[in-house]
Image: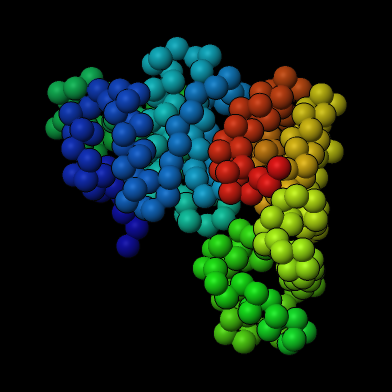
Length: 149
Length: 170
């Protein structure tokens, strides 16, 4: 049975404790990406360069490369990385398929993008706001806000 | 064909599947099948690689070299075989020049055709994918020439890291 976003967030937060605290930094998100890669048997590389997108994820050889636009400020770069890591953490892509470019597509594309934004907000939120973020109404508001933005 | 495969299997018996793949360009799963006697469905491109390797091995034996030494010194296998490049008609001129230069360097360095094909697709994946993403929003906005160049320069080092150590012969 398909998990709700709340269930997926709970599961990944139980798996990676720093998510429960929030306020994840660039380094913390890189560590999370590395841990996801280790768990799923693929090397995940995070790189900052001038890039025409805030963030992207693609395959190069046997690795997954997350690129973040280095021209943006730290907060934007951190959020972009959190968004891409969110796609991986929430299981949006079959990373063992040979697809080169990972992008959300199809009828659920908006939903998956909104979920990745919710994850990014969850991971980078001000620490100490644990309980309210697991309220379903709060999650619904976040998802709607992400779609509107 | 059976004799050819038998000679190839014999000539590479001392190497692991992955080593044979690295030395000959024949995929390790294909090598496993050949060693198991399953050669009936060998593709023409694979046959050419087997023949090229055996030519190297024969020439090397005549002069007392290993096949790898022979390939490195001058009788290279044909890395241009089966290069299948993606459509790049959408690349602006300066970006196209960079793409051609990169792919040309892969050929010069002796990467197998299959690897060059894959690397070429990965070079432009963000451009193709980016156009897809952008065109899904309001209005169609493709990447500009500067943005295409940005992508090619940004992804090239990762392609080098992923493939050069294993496949570059010169």
